[in-house]
Length: 214
Image (cartoon, rainbow, N blue to C red; front, side, top):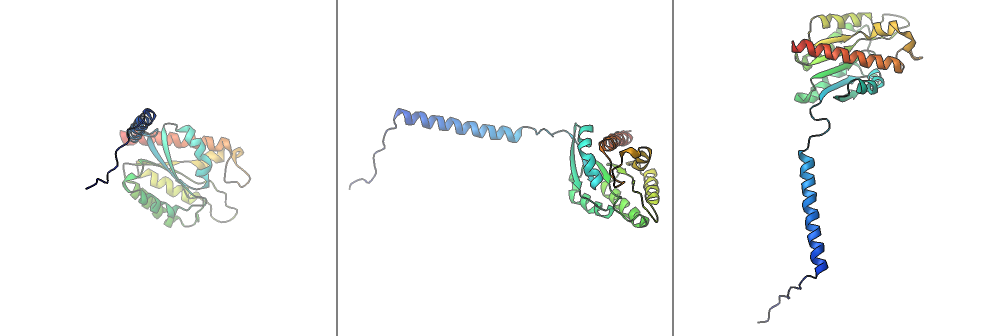
């Protein structure tokens, strides 16, 4: 019976060299892939900060990155975000929620709804837990007529007094002392103001972490 197998053609020298080169390249590619998978990222080992906020947080974030160069900053920022939206956002993180949180919420809220806002603050703090630092900036927002944000700021200060892991950044007093920071809308601030805000956040984070470590 005749065999249907074809004889194997011997490889020429150039073909052998090409095959060997391809094998070496394949091994090198696998080695690089494995090294990339096992090598720590640039952010590995960095403390993480979650910024939960509004347009004020957006404006100050570039300065916060400079103020905290050794931190990995994760942001949850949306314009005109209200305090009541915060708890659901934090809950989504589950166990991955960073140990330090900066909250910039309240400016877009109704200043007369202090009872509801207190409940939102308490829900936020309950999700954060007692071992996470929360730095919450209070509100500077002039109101032409009717109640302003004084009651909201007093409420935040009261919550601060009863919670060792909550630090209120007194943004209202900072802006009151530096009206030259203000832009035309009377709420947002210039570069000097954002730089000062970022440094104040850094100061409060350090103080909070020191308190919890004591």
